[in-house]
Image (cartoon, rainbow, N blue to C red; front, side, top):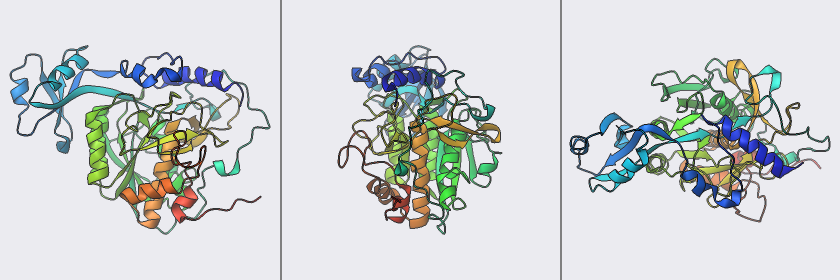
Length: 432
């Protein structure tokens, strides 16, 4: 690996810009507690706050007597959350003021999460995020470790039952031939319509990783016909994902029949109470796993919503079974999976290859690319074994390959995902 710190810093600067409406400066050093730094800077939806009243208290008691507050819309009925319009620029101050009101259970800004993956290599003329590379080509001696690749052996997932996994992302290329028969179209929360069509590429890539016929975990293992994806679009074309959209989608996915796990390849830094409550509902009430990306800043802190103890937080590894330089890690990390580690704009090595827009394919990297491997595996394991909820989570984590320090550690969590062992509960013998 050549100049890893220089590579990390350079790609972090580019990656954050690619996943934001406006460019962001890279953190100077991960040891400076980037969570605390970013929490002050995290974007919010201008002019909106989320609010939940205490039991027995009507929102009208608040809005009817407070000038400047107006009901914008309500979120999922179970959430009992309303979105209020406030003066732009006053979101944090208004949320803090209203949280102190004895009639209010909580109020918070409508935080903006970001998708946690990006392109660096441009295969086959597809539009990549970047046109130039700060990295030299990989040396010819740089080779993959055999068992670092995802162990999705053909046929091991066939013969299972029908299950559903959820995608909360930028939508899907609904006409992609790789995804034919795999998709259940849910709601587009970003545009308020019933067609969650992808206009970014990120969602299509993560869905392909989960269930694609030739590139996805479910398809490769033979469980492709039994694992469907309930698609909800929560992010804009620019990769902006308001927590209000995420909360609505979590409740909708949790309530969908046959749902066993949902994929959130997105994240931020601030803890959202609305998001926490939605995840708790999915996991504790409905027995649906919430699998979320740890984040791409390289910091020693897991991002949110992966930071929720009820989420399964996923870090990214490279093809040498080391932590990918961009991957966040730290206390509360649950599991790792290959996320790609692209070093060249002239070779296609080391990225995660999956479906993309216009029926195409692309190499991307990020914890966004690692997370759907875990979610896809969850779908296959549930289909093949019938395990759900806590038992399914335990199977995924207990069968992971131990990496780094013996046992649990904050770099790899419970280990790197082993799809073969998760499905069969046995170990695949590698030749040599």
